[in-house]
Length: 251
Image (cartoon, rainbow, N blue to C red; front, side, top):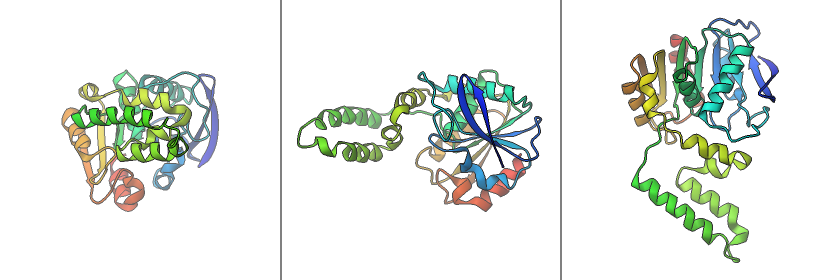
């Protein structure tokens, strides 16, 4: 694994590439929200030709100066691949990285195949989420009470963890980008995907539940779903050998 840097959109971007890097058919690893490229490190030993990106705002890459959404991240990916002269890439996206990969191919980006690992992108509207939204507003007002103010961060974190939104409170300077990202539902985009798609999912995933994987399988015409039993949101870390067996057979 070789550590590299490149300038894209006036941002210093950190990435890693294989010692025997080739520009044709490269595996392009796209990590999830807040994750570094090295989250895929255990997989690198199983492949020969790859690059792995630290997204702008995470790892050792600089943060965007404006508020990016999935479209901006997909445009960034296109420029990254162009600068490295990569053709026929196989995009390997986990969680947030999967949603960027979807937006990239739907917006005309070229790829040989996409492999989506517990991918984000489906945003369900529900009464439960409405209640959580109202609750968040009430909590925000409550936290300004003088007696409570000194416990503000701890209470906020516990509340957002309770509603499975701890990523928001931990986003810091990236919070506005996070809000823009999660407001983008890709459900209607799934039917527009024309490239071969492989879905790999942990059946115990709470962040992006298996129901999302089943829906993606149903809506993406040329797709195949592999479910890893007793794995959560990170099946490539939790069930390493089982994941590798599926993954290597599909690349």
